[in-house]
Each structure stands twice: as structure tokens, then as C-alpha cells.
Length: 115
Length: 109
Image (tube, rainbow over all chains, first blue to last red):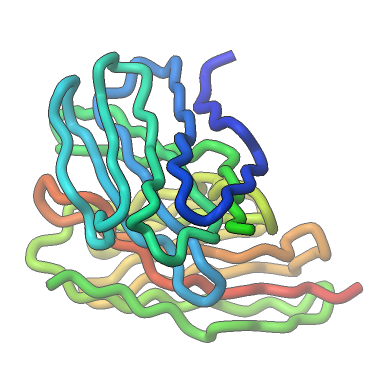
């Protein structure tokens, strides 16, 4: 089965801790994205990567870090510098074609709660 | 700056009562408009891509249309299982998608 997996589904963090959210895709997609979703806020872009070993900041990158060492993997680290990390985190990927980027496909999400 | 506005924020329908959701956008050169369905606690599920004004796409009870300023998602004779949040997103150039805040649809039996 092709798709995007995120783990864990639920994650609890103590204040001052760094945590890493996993995102893996076996769709052979070129680009990968991380979004944060809060109630009533829609999807806000944290980071995205169009190619291995390269990534760009989105609208709300402060307090987050990413890496893209492999095409199929794009982990997100929520650092202690992120003051309000409790949210639903979504990973997505897309295939680059002659139309630039086509539709994004999403993973099932990780709900992060700060204790 | 690309912007997407969805209306209404929430919509409550009786089963079988057809209606439309609106997605208004301002972009510098539309490359594509995307509709997604999202159930609570889950990732968005892709529904449609529209590329040019006048284009229409259908899937079961859903039909998406596109003009130069907005897109509509028409729901014909909805059922309770159509209850979800519907998200609209636009793409211009090689930039990432810009999402609206969504319309929360409830269909009551």
C-alpha cells in the first residue's frame, strides 16, 4: 500500500523537552510539507522540502526544525523554543510534474500535547 | 499575497437538502485550486483539483466548479456521512498551497 505514515499518533511533551515527529512516504513524491492545525485556524505551513538535503521555512517556522536526508522521510522536531506547541501536526507530500506541484496527500496526523 | 476565504464557517443541513460551499481567492496567477475533506482527528482527504475557469468535476454527491474569483462545492441531496470539514486551497507558481480555514458541514438525518 502506498501512502504517508506519521508516528506517533499521540505525543505528550513536558515543558523544556524537544520531541521529534516522524513522517514517511512510499509514494516516491518529491516534495514534503509540515503543517500545524489549531481549532479555527486552518492549516499553517511550518516547513517544506522540494528536494533531498534542502528545505524552506514556512509561515510559522520559529521553534521548529526539520531535516531531509532521504526522499521518503521528513522528520519534524518541536524544540523547547516553541512556546505553544500543543496542536495537531500534519505531514503531506506531492509529486512534481510539468504543472509544478500537483495535489498534496496527507498523513493521518500527530496530536501533540504539552503537559 | 495569496489569500483564500471560505464561507460559511459552519453549515447545518437536513438530509437531502442541497447547498453550496464557497471558496473565494486572490492569487497572482492561479496554477490550481484544490478541495479536501477532513474528518475530526484525521488528515485531509483529497477530493478535486481545478485548473481553469469554467472547469467542473464531480464525485458522487459533490460537484466542484471554478470561476476567476471563486470556487463552489455543490452538495446534492447530502447524507449524514457527508458531515466533515471541507478545505479549499490554491497554488500559484511554485509556491506551497495556501489553505482557507474550512467550512464545517453537519448533515442531520
